[in-house]
Image (cartoon, rainbow, N blue to C red):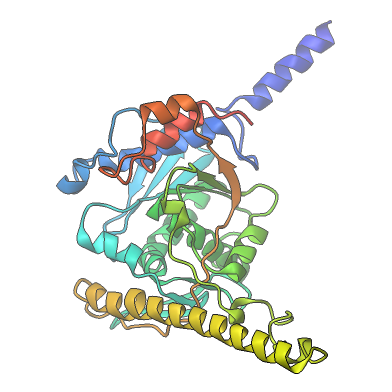
Length: 373
């Protein structure tokens, strides 16, 4: 009996949230704490007044109890910002990436959604070039607006990670909601390849949790992110009624497929068919190919070239990058679906008067309370 009690006591101590280090997979309590931390971005004196009036601040999400704010970055780029929170036991820190705020330049970052390669350089201003590797595959591409956000945030994040590590913290959760989640995807892979280069310590454990996240990149970037965070270290939390995880617009061209596929040489595939069959199928095939190519070009022109002109009003020294000829956005991360029940649907019915009805942090917090693994 004594052995059983001792075993039970040891289990309780090892399982205590206050004592445990990071574990893979979704943890409801951990996620709710992350939402509490994220929601505090609106509650400080240096928060823009317009953002303090944001209707997303409903008071439903309480303040975090086990974490304290230790660093808040200055606003950089298109009003990007991040916070560093430390757990009371000084063993775990949270990198909380701020979301969109209610100013034009912050929204421009979302709309500037042409794709660029996941390896390369971005000229932020006349004296600053952001060199990055976010995937090993050269076919991987990402959202240029959120890359711009990462480029401005990365230096202070790297500095604070190193300082925290020097103080004994080797476990970090990277978290963001909405735009913050989109940048979180990119940040996680950036840190992975920086660790390989030796610019940050290799003994750090990162867990990534993306809440209400849009799609960050194409298939090859998603493959890379899911591989880097395999076995439950990269989570994406979704409310199925939220439209934001369905964005940005996506077009899949034939050139987006892997090299070996049945569409690369239709003529060879149809060579044994009668002439009229070949003529008919090839004609239809050419039309479908051309239409997807045209659609991608329209998106690149309007969400790349035209948006860049608007972004330059706020970042006049930003050099326009070469866009990748693709718009094949895909979802990333291990999905956790917060399925709305009848009670939620009655409490928050669909309405065109508030398109963010199902996107706000408090909605995700409410849904998480009824989530059962």
